[in-house]
Image (cartoon, rainbow, N blue to C red):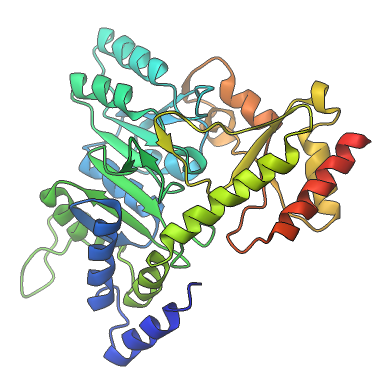
Length: 365
């Protein structure tokens, strides 16, 4: 926490606005818009809710196909299925670990030949790393396909010096407890189009029509953020810059201390943007390093240090086993050999060095 959250929470309690609306929500939306350079923002209960609404606003319905990154968390793909849609999972490119723009273009052109264009493309900015947006936007604009940016992990990161989440038709952010700033649970939907955010606001509030009684002409959801959580978000937003600086420092410290070990590589920094380094992620080449990713993870676990494999690609998940996948195994290789190291903003140099020493012991064995 930044230290200002409690004062803002106290202010919210004293105002007696506890419901999923109120002055803290309004202020958080305005301050968030300013922070990322978006015209309009809508505070929601989660990033998943934001993706769900973004897909609805993009016109996704039963039977529609939606292109989405395979190397991601399931929340990027689950809402497609909520709507009866069909995910098409696209492999990663080596340069960023994000969705491969060439495969996106190839898939869209192949689908056009079959007369069934994808209804939307969900681009995930993995672990805070900007995807290569321009070629994706170019091909999607050519075919009139809306782009949804899943920037749930990427608040504070940029593409060509502009905030992620502001390039597509709609952008999605998460304030889950593990994100770079948190409201304990929550999300944000942003857009340059007021009508989209206005419609999303209605859908997120049980789709109540303007009437003195409860009138509903479409299906709605209970997706709004509470005034209390928005107060936390306002306090967190004040330290976003410092959080990004700290995460990037942690990444560079790991890189410095592990650079002498053979067989360890890091998620690259792309030439087109700057990652927020939400998590420091490494890939371990077993032959060069002398041990597997799992050997390292278990050694860390023995020392009460939590680490995790990278996201298991969606096309490898049992629940999505029947979905279409386009790729050549890049994401599978990254998953097999990749490890997320402890990266919390409260980490000290001593904490980082402790992690590094365990990794070095595994390599020496």
